[in-house]
Image 1: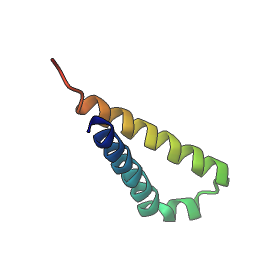
Image 2: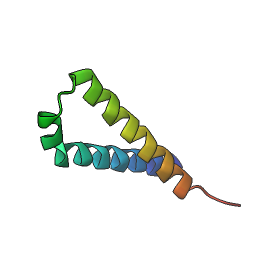
Image 3: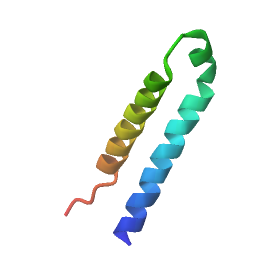
Image 4: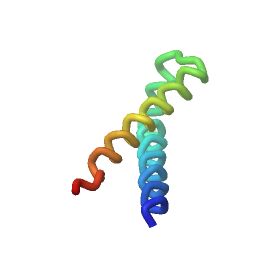
Length: 61
């Protein structure tokens, strides 16, 4: 059950990351950025959100 919850949280973090990139897509058009820079930025945002969400929902004994 805990693994399923972690998977759902990771999926939610990925969805938030993709939404943030999609909502700011016009910036990518105006600011020249290589494709690998966009992927690296998306990966960093995803990892940061995943880490913050995992710290938020950590069980405390």
